[in-house]
Length: 180
Image 1 (cartoon, helix red, strand yellow):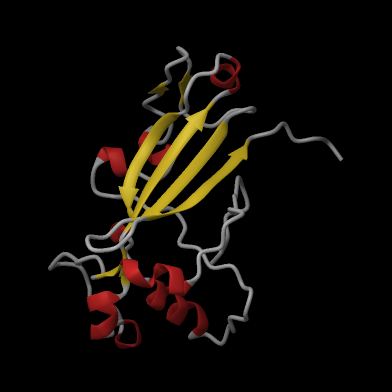
Image 2 (tube, rainbow, N blue to C red; image 1 turned 135 degrees about the horizontal axis):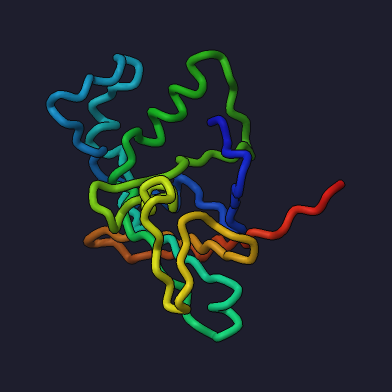
């Protein structure tokens, strides 16, 4: 909703609700000590089928890795089943204050992090705020992205009984900013 203003990437692929329909699943189960959502966000049908069964991956390729024709290194592998809020809850929360959504508006979830270290969704989380460097196959390490680093996002709908569909890749490279 607030849109990150640093290193935001938007894929060339647009995934419609109709394409996501076969991958509907139960919403993330909340812990017993977790407060219940407010009534306007707590619909039984949405809790039953409002989640999404998507496999997610985040990879990195540095300039050095690309120069050596090395494969990108996977940083994270998770699932959208770990979304704290369902898409319907996000839309409801967004519009309850009077903000209208219009056809063509872009809607995203933000970072999706799972419960295991392998499913953490951001480099900041993976490196414990920059304290624990990630070792790359090139011998380089990363605690934060650097100029020339390319981040690759992949997603795929996967659910038993459904044909799996991939959403393509979303790639973005960090480039040196130019003084205006």
